[in-house]
Length: 299
Image (tube, rainbow, N blue to C red; front, side, top):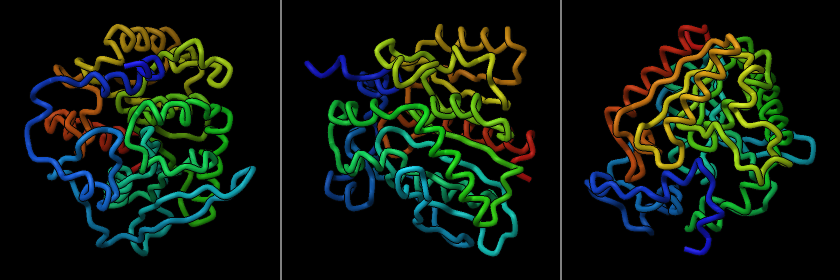
């Protein structure tokens, strides 16, 4: 299609997902998916998407003060917990929709004060209501890294003001949010650990003015241990690029681990999408928990 050049590596794999296995299962109608709070831009929404309740949690929406306004966030934390560790949730390009909220609650159930910032709020558009990926790209691709990192710093400061233990700070994210994880790990010296699910490691040259350095270029600047989780069948993030990232991190003497799941496509953790692969998703989640425990984010 004519808009195809607008797609970025981190969503190319989703756009080109044609594996017949991806069409197994049942899907919600578009109206039911929208009513449940899911984005429609990523395609049909699985009827058996994971749903995490809020029992034992304090959850809600809040506003975080940033340089030029107030940024919406969604958070989940253990009810009555004192000084819980803080984990930032870096979302995909689809906005703060139900999957990201559910992941935030899952982290809350693990004992974290988990916060998902809606850092595209300045665009004045509800990304969750956009139904076509090419329509999203001009919006999300104009987000400068400097602003993104500042927004995340503001989220951390807010978490601290709300009683979160930012001495046990972690970040995790998916797709474009996975790239954000790598970028933030090179930015914040106080970060204890980071986990990137299929975040692109090479940026298009056209983005250089807004995104000065790609994750691979930032490898020597990583300030926290990063776990990268990738799919062998990701058509947007070739294994060769992931291997190059691994070599760059090794050459810089950084602490990291990269795991590549055989036959897994882009978005393998996204249980609401056709790309979901249960085995890889569950193992990746468990790897993340172990990583956060190893580096003292989670108890």
